[in-house]
Image (cartoon, rainbow, N blue to C red; front, side):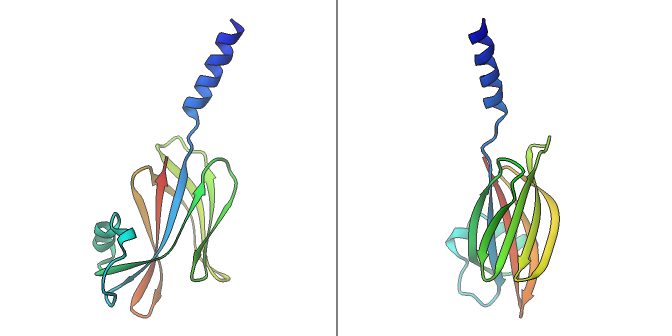
Length: 140
């Protein structure tokens, strides 16, 4: 009987555990590039619809594991850093607290829900006529 209950508890805990991660991509949007990076083919239609630029260049990409309420630091390149702190959520999305920094300047501090197979796009600073964009995607 004791083995049955132990097995049941382990099974329930395994069913509730989500080995999730968050992928952050730093993107430069421009009309002056020759083509969009192949690594952004999955996001290109959404990027064009939301921001209207013809071409997108991947500047950096990193992933953070969303295990507990531990703050992760993602160095995305070009002086941009993203701090991610997971929040427990009853939604089918990953809820995270974000702090997006450029050097010593805080660009965005917010809580975001990132659905499992969708991406959240955040407009960052302008660079001349180009824009910097942060794309967040949840992974199970």
